[in-house]
View 1 (cartoon, rainbow, N blue to C red):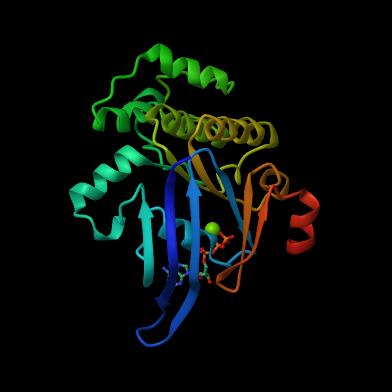
View 2: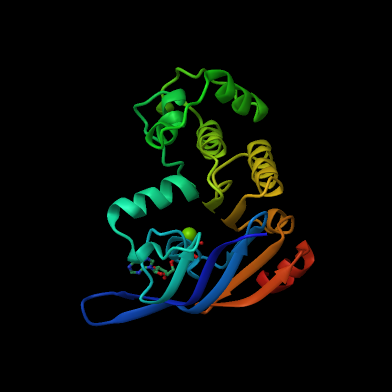
Length: 237
Ligand SMILES: Nc1ncnc2c1ncn2[C@@H]1O[C@H](COP(=O)(O)OP(=O)(O)OP(=O)(O)O)[C@@H](O)[C@H]1O
Ligand SMILES: [Mg+2]
């Protein structure tokens, strides 16, 4: 088991109008290792997305430190930060983050090309078929449904092979069959040794993760190992 993520007392304040500041996160500490699937829950506005961004190199905390694969992303040069993201981190967002004008295949291989990895079309097809992806590899992204777009985003992350995956409500906008396919894929990735940190509102999905962190008032109020749906419901109802 290897420590992939370590956050130490991270706080985040936003400046509202030049004078007033609001503190969204207060001294949050957490760690995550290879093979762990962690879910982050909390009411709307509790700071889940802000926390995920701070953990994943996208938003510098106001104080505290973050280590990703032993590196503090906020102390790296632009070139080294790009390398860290390319090699270590996968991002899956609610709104897919794909390039709308490019076809499916190009979207999937873009990050691989950037890191000099070769991918065969057969391999891409296999990963997509496995998720019951029906569209053509040459189809422009903009012509796909939300569920299909999210499958493309997941396929890209699977093939890129990065060990730490951050997902912000990856199944939030999808119908229930697509939700299940995508969640099962994320679970497979954790079983294969990757580390998944997922924000979700879905208690049934969170109940299938290894650890649930519940955010409230800027802090992790509850940390449940092998959470059950009942426990989550009692806290979040
Ligand atoms: N750039 C910003 N400037 C000012 N306030 C912000 C900024 N980003 C987030 N906030 C505030 O921080 C709080 C937490 O927002 P965040 O998006 O992290 O919540 P969330 O838990 O992800 O909510 P949701 O479940 O609706 O996605 C909110 O009150 C939000 O308005
Ligand atoms: Mg959010």
